[in-house]
Length: 142
Image 1 (cartoon, rainbow, N blue to C red):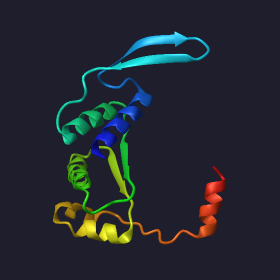
Image 2: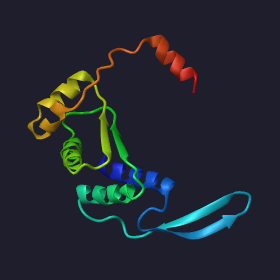
Image 3: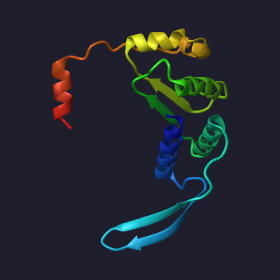
Image 4: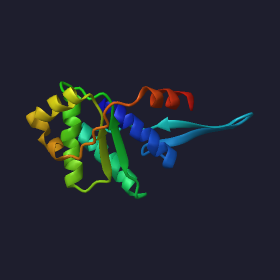
């Protein structure tokens, strides 16, 4: 999960501008214009250090980062690391937000974990049951 957050963040940065450590190595103008990229050295360090470099890069363009996690599982060690690191980001006033979703019993179990006590002060939104008609309508409008 944490590596995926790094990779997806780098993909999003690539849509804004050049990814740090990446350079254009080729350009093709055929039936479709295309670019070839070569990624330089991977971002080194632990997860927090790697995310700090990504957030530093985003800050140059006054861009924030929203991290979303669906299906929260309370026994997920990477989730604990994410939440602990997110707490540091908020204390450092980074432009980052965290959105977690999960079944009520899994969220309750996670909130009882001493290592993520920071989450107990987070704003919670309970959505309840989504009517079947709304689900059917949403799936046909795509």
